[in-house]
Image 1: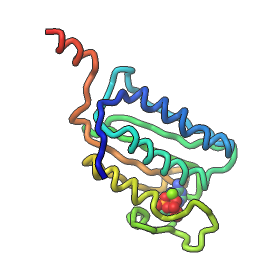
Image 2: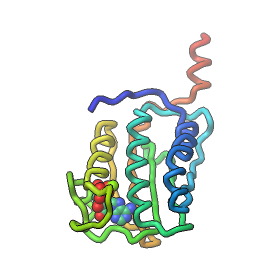
Image 3: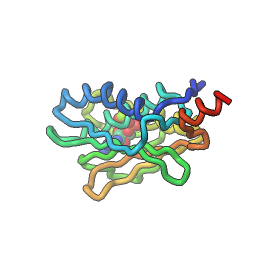
Image 4: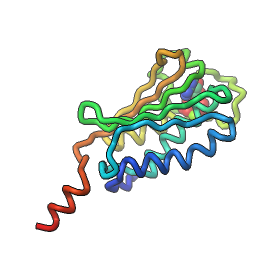
Length: 169
Ligand SMILES: Nc1ncnc2c1ncn2[C@@H]1O[C@H](COP(=O)(O)OP(=O)(O)O)[C@@H](O)[C@H]1O
Ligand SMILES: [Mg+2]
């Protein structure tokens, strides 16, 4: 897998995620809530196409377990020099050890009746996170639902204003 790393404005990226992924949620009457406190100009280097693919995989898992009119929450923030994306749902949560769920073809329920279940989604997410020198983990949240969280380094985080003014000199 070769990444196409580009300087990406985080706020713009998150609103395009909301726009692109919300339509899948609306089919199920589920709301995708996006929460962050970035400024418009905050950016980081990552492969926006691949990170969107990860978020789509994670949110579509959540959608399988989220009841109509419930909410899936996507939060993004900086913690310990990492850019974190965190998806939480109100579904049934994981029943097994969550380190297994990133294995290739792993499904918690082998005879799952869900179509669109290959056991590949989170495996691919892990590959993409690792390609970015990041990592991914999953756990059950306080509401009993699932949370999947991944992070990538912010060594490259920058502010466009700073870059532009630096270029003028
Ligand atoms: N949001 C979630 N809530 C509960 N279980 C989940 C969630 N996301 C993933 N899982 C469990 O982890 C397994 C692996 O997920 P994934 O790799 O995306 O495969 P699948 O093709 O089954 O969606 C799923 O089969 C499911 O058992
Ligand atoms: Mg999946």
